[in-house]
Every structure is written in structure tokens, then in C-alpha cells.
Image 1 (cartoon, rainbow, N blue to C red):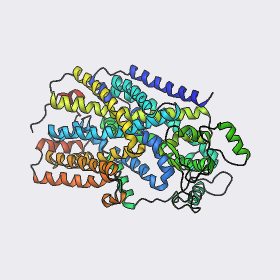
Image 2 (tube, rainbow, N blue to C red):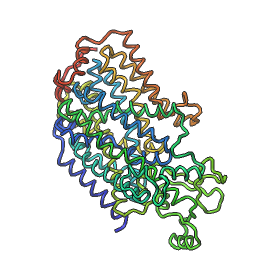
Image 3 (cartoon, rainbow, N blue to C red):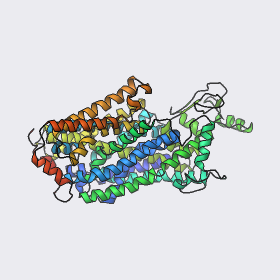
Image 4 (tube, helix red, strand yellow):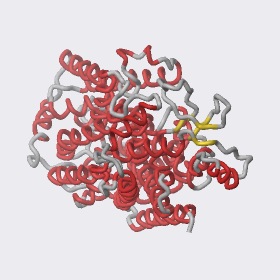
Length: 595
């Protein structure tokens, strides 16, 4: 059985499971649709949260970043890991105690303002749509690489699958689908990593193989990789060309952006209490750690294998018979371009330009000692998917990895669609514009909003191809969340003097400045030397976050304090168990305080 059979087997099989779960867990009420009835077991919720959290950026792109940026790519690993800990310990239990199941709902009630709620809805939509663009790009990469379909067609197929289980099952369907997706993605990530670790270091545990000696030598694998890349003119794998300030800013944007991500926060409302929110956060961290501790090894193995199989290989054009030409090159003592490269080249995600017209594929860094110019432009996003092919692993492993990549992208996309759907149907329509809306009408609006969001997210996924690799697109969402949502959530919990005027000013400043900076330096001025303080678009959200928080504090201090009942509420939510959280019906029907 060939690779194509196993790819279709795993992809179609897992899709059938996801759709089956959505039908089984069909949401019949707003309570089911928004928060899965508040009765998800903490371990199950931890697994679903891990799947929601580990997006295409974690599964597909992070290892590729580590492979080609080395130490510089570790900012994504550190930022996302630290950010989840920050969210789990600092915000999630208190938000669950407050009882509102969306970030705009929290903002609207904590800051006693319909306008603040609307601004929070806008911020949540900006963050969610930016994030979902990266997921859809990951879907396109997976489909175009293995199923022989166009990148854009792959995105359309992914849209169709998400449409079924997000619009029918709601959060209830999404939760149990994400459990299945976690199982798929974690096996898909770790199984090939074990194979690669055995081949390259002889150690079956990737986390230990990463620091073990290369097979047949007394040289540590990392030391060997450092030598290989420096011989080709690249910086050492364990070094970086990023400035320390930019590394710090990107890490900070990812950390604090994590704590402001609406689609992760909403998961903690599917459990029955603040205590269970803490427990599920702990389990989620365990499940996340399995992949995140494996990623550095996968990245290092990918870089080494890529160089070994492609550098100085003789190129074979599409007009030539590959088998005959390959045999001819091998007989002459040469190295033919591998079949995996030719397959991925068709997707446009690998590039080769024969600059010296010698027919040999030279992969070189900017300081190549032989003076040869680099002729290869690999895309970071493909290497987790391509790793099994590069290492000639069995076909079933290749099919499993494709299914895992799609599971990672679709699980997060579904969580984001729930945020978009609830922001439109609950926060904008029921809580703001149509306060007499019934549960039945709200459920219809929620499904319609989810369907519209699926279409919009697919179009954004196609557009995101211009923005960069998956993790880079996702990083923009984290920056937006860090600058616009984190300050008002954090201050709303820990500073009772924070008022509606301060919250509105903080959100607007954070969103407008961060989005403008990202847009300007990705589409207008592409010169990195013009960056503010040398901080990249991926990290600027961290800088503006502090300014946003200071603006919120300053405005709050010069305007009237919040009503006393709001200040008492802030005191209450920091002591779990002292008040009864509002349920969905309560949140939906409670009257808004006067402006």
C-alpha cells in the first residue's frame, strides 16, 4: 500500500469520526452550543483545551521555525508555553468565578458598559480572524502537499469539515471532537519523532535524542548540526541573529497574548466550577507538554535531514524521466534530487534557482566559505509533514502525520469559530442590540454566524499566503490580543478602580496601534531597519501592551470610579467560592447597568 492510500485512509477516517461526533453531540440549547452544558469533565476539558491550543502553528510551523531559525525560533516555544501557564494560573480561574463565558461578556459586565462590550467584540473578532487565517493556511499546506489538490481547494475542503461540526455541534460537539483530534495529533507528532530519533541518535525518546550523540559517533547531535550549518555559511544552530530586545518582545507578545486569547479562555467555562477550571488547566498543560518538549528535537532532526538529502544533489527536471536519470546520476557517484523534494516542489512551497547553471542544488548561508550563492528556498511550514518522507519512513506514518496536521488546524479553527459565533450572536445581538431575543432565535443566529465565519476564515486563509508562514501569521493574533485584551482583563480582575472609560481607551489604543504597525511593516514598508526600537511586527504587541495598560490606568484615575457594586464584585471573584457564577440563561437575560 502506497503513501496515497494511507493518507486518504487516515484523513477520511478521522474526518468521518469528527462528523460522527458532531452528529452525536448536536447542541439543542444555547447552553450546549456555547459552553457544552458546563458539565465537561476536567480531564476531558484539559485534552480538548490542549487540542484547541495546539494549532497548526504548534504542529506544523513551530518545528520548522526551530529547524531553520535554531535558537531564534525558540521564542515561539518559550512564549506559547509560558503564556499558557500565565493564563491558567492568573486569569482562567477568576474568569470562571465571574461566570461570563466570553471575553466581551466579561468586559461588558465588569465595565458596566454596552459600548465597552462592543469594542471588546471588535477586538475578539480581529484576534480570532487573524488567528484562524493561520489555521486555514495550515490546512492548505497539508492538502496541497499530500492529496494533490490546489492550496486554495484544500482550504475549501477544510472549511466544509469545520462547518459541519462547528455549526451543528456547537461547543458541545467541538469539545468532544477536539478530544479525538488531540489523540490524532499527538500520535501523529510523536510517532515519526521516535522513528527519527532512533535513526539519527539511536535513542527512542526524542527529548533525550536531542541531546544524545549522533549514531555511530561520539559527537553530540547538536554539535554535529552546528558544524554542518556553519560549514555551509549559516549561523550556528544554537545562536540567533535577532536582537535581544526583539526576542524579548516576541516572547512577551506571545505570552501575554495567550492570556488574552478568547478561544482558550472560553474553554474554562465548559467545566462546572473555578476549581475544575484549575484542574483542567493543569491537565491541559500536561497534554501540551508532550508535544512542546518534542518540538525542539523534531526541528533539529528536520534541519539535519534536509541538508543531508538535498544539498549538492543533482537536479532532475520535470521533462526528464526521473527513474532513468536518477539511476544514471547514482551510477556516476552523484546524488540525485530526492523524490520527496520533487513532490513538494509542485506545491510551490520549495524553490530552486540554478544561479550558476551547473545543475547542482547548492544550499548555502550568507557566509558560505566557497562563495557559492544559495539556490534553495524551503518553506518552514512543510517540514513536520515532510519529515517522514525525507527519512523514508513507512507510508502509514506519512498518512498519520497528514491527519495530525489537519487535526491541529481544524481543532483550533473550530474553537475560534465558537468565539466569533458567540461574539456576534450573544454579545452583539442578545446582550446589546436585541435584548428580548429568545434562546431559540439566539441559537439560530449563532449557527448562522458560525457558517458566515467559516466562509470568511477560508478567504482569509487564502489571503494569508501573502503574510508569511503559519506561526508568523498566528503571532500577529497574539500581538493583537496582548495589546487590546490582556490589559483590561488583568486590570479588571486585580484593580477595582479600573473603569469603563479606561477600558475603552486601553482597548482602542492597543488594537489600532498594533494592527496599524503590523499592516504597515508587512505591506507598505518592508525594511526591518525602520522598525520601532528594532521590534518586529510579531513582537510589537508587547510594547503597545504596556502603553495600552498605562493609558487605561491614567484615564481611570482622572474619571469617575466604578460603581460600588462593581468594586465589590471584583473583590468577590478573587476569592473562589464566595459567589455563584451566572449561567448562560442568567448571562443572556440579565439587564445591562445604565451607561
